[in-house]
Amino acid sequence: MIEIKSIEPTKSNLKKFTQFQIDLYDGNPYYVPPLVSDDVATLSPGVNPAFEFCDAAYFMAYRDGKPAGRIAGIINRQVNEGHGKATARFGFVDFIDDPMVSEALMNAVEDWARAKGMKKIIGPLGFTDLDHEGMLVEGFQELSTMATIYNYPYYPQHLERLGYEKESDWVEFMMDVPDSIPDKHNRIADIVKKKFGLKVLKYKSRKRIKNEYGRALFHLINDAYDGLYEYSKLTERQIDYYINIYLGLLNLDLVTLVVDKEDQLVGVGISMPSMSRALQKSKGKMFPLGWWYLLKGLKGKNDRVDLLLVAVKPEYQNKGVNALLFQDLIPYYIKYGYKSAESNPELETNAKVQGQWEYFGHRQHRRRRSFFKNL
Image 1: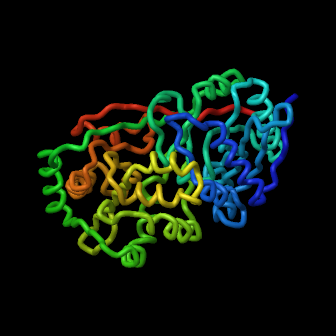
Image 2: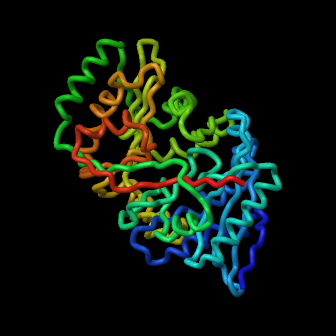
Image 3: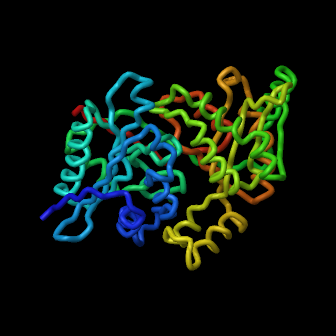
């Protein structure tokens, strides 16, 4: 017997909602769990500022009384109003390999979306682009990352059986860290500095980078990513929220800012040592020992670095600013002993972004997809 229950967003309920995924993947060597506390915060209306312009509903499936699946329905009013459409999102979706369970879950979120007047549903997506998005369709035997979704191969098969079709794909790449800065990067970076009067800024103080460029960094992300698939512009309250979450965690050696003659931010590159193994050991919990594994992941030896973010002001895109970013970052990658660098998901149609990897040994190792269904 399959039963669907609507989940009220209390802290206790959201912990169970998040824990279901961690339990479902127990023992899987490629899955990387989230921190339960982080996902609970994201899903909580009283915490996540995205609820200023988003509606959400949560459902869990039970088979014979046992948890068997979960899903979130999300309506981002900001994106809908900006594009003049009536589209719902589904996200935070997981289920056992039972077609009756996946059908019941998708029916629940579709019915919720219809009742809200929506004409189409897409996903998996989160509230904004800083949440995990895209269902894995290739690369199931690749270690996941802290910033991406891992799912079993049967997930997309279940969606396709229910009439969902491809809307958009993202691809991801693994690059070899070179022994030195590629000559072409050096030449382009030097030309760009002279031609546009650009310079690199590095910081040793988190407080200073927050005060001087914290808000500008997220405004740059808004400018650089505006117009990309389903991008939801960050509000001022969201910017304040993310400044406090993210900038306090970063190794500032791996944060590169590029500014113009007036010290206005035109580009940023942010990397972070891979936290995949540390999160696996933590099992999604800070205590009793999760904090130790995470600290070790941040400070200890690591051979992989995650390229969390590269953003360039629109008027400087395709003018070589990326070469300037990597001219600065590559020596730090070498210093810390990184052998490989992993990109975040990039739209498969974004050839210009993917073209920057041609100067490195690289391979496309994952592909993920958003699906749609007309309601």
